[in-house]
Image (cartoon, rainbow, N blue to C red; front, side):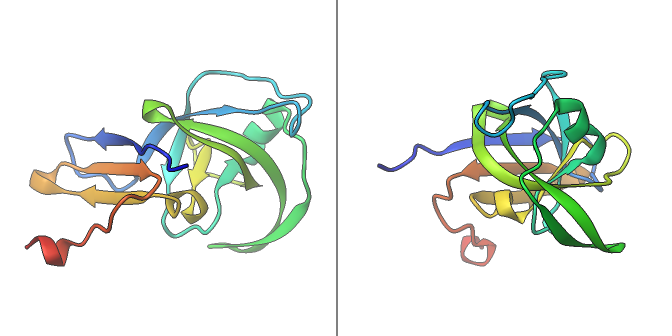
Amino acid sequence: MKLKPIAFTVTSNKRLGLLTSPVNIYSTDKFNKNFKKKKDVYTALWDTGSSLTVISDELAKDLGLDIHGEMIADTAGGKIKANKYIISLSLPNRLNIENVMISSGSLGPGIDILIGMDIIGLGDFAISNVDDKTVFSFRFPSTRVIDFVKEN
């Protein structure tokens, strides 16, 4: 069965140094017996330099996420021991990614979750900066090759 693509676009009136979007975090009793939804919308940072999706240590604790193992993560600051969790994400336009294994870590202020290449790589991801206005778009599943050389 072929999935119908779902996409969303984030538009800014200025050039952005960080790409963020709203995200909802949810779960089932199967993976998180004590899950406590705290709010409807969190802030996700999209990071093509990260191989994994990371939730902040504080948010993982606040949500009551069950630990599903540990891992050694390579970060910009070196190797760290990180917990592993299983969560589901609802991105804009009801683009849901369910039961994804993520790790925990220390994220910057105002960032709840970092979307890494494990999720970005499931779809098509494009960034434009026309007239100093940033637009980024994500589509899942991937449907075609985006090739700027062939478009010109």
